[in-house]
Length: 240
Image (cartoon, rainbow, N blue to C red):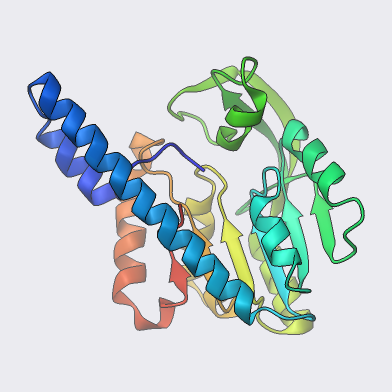
């Protein structure tokens, strides 16, 4: 998850009309916090609804599993869950947590629109707070509050190929959660630009335009495409 505190549209509007006084800035901060709390509550309710419909035999993909908060909820449904997490620190916690959970498969790798070896860059405060900062690790350059010098090489899998393979083998993937710190953009662009979106019944993603300023126009275009195309109603870009 990022530290975003409002939807991209409102974030940009507020930046353009920044409050002048300390009191106004504090009020805006409280408003943004409330908006985030509402988004969090909505996402949690959405996930409960998804879990109510998942059943044994379904496949759920947790991309950016971190320490397994969502993985655990998906696994409790009896569905087959594949959790992808590139950060070794977070993956070690996943391995401990799900060591005795037979319907969970853990993959210590990043996912993106192409396979290879990538540099996973960590947050500036990772050494001081690895548990809290591990959620911000990214494979994209230029991220806000990311220390590019604090990077490690990790394997990266082609999510588009994973989706093709799994949907061909067992039908549409029941659920995908995508919280991959910016790498979601290229994946989602490819999915909505072709026929791959039909390979999943429901997908939720957290988008990271506030973290990557140079990508904001592309994120805005993606949101416009998803919101205007009724065939893409099963894609939700407002995850926490």
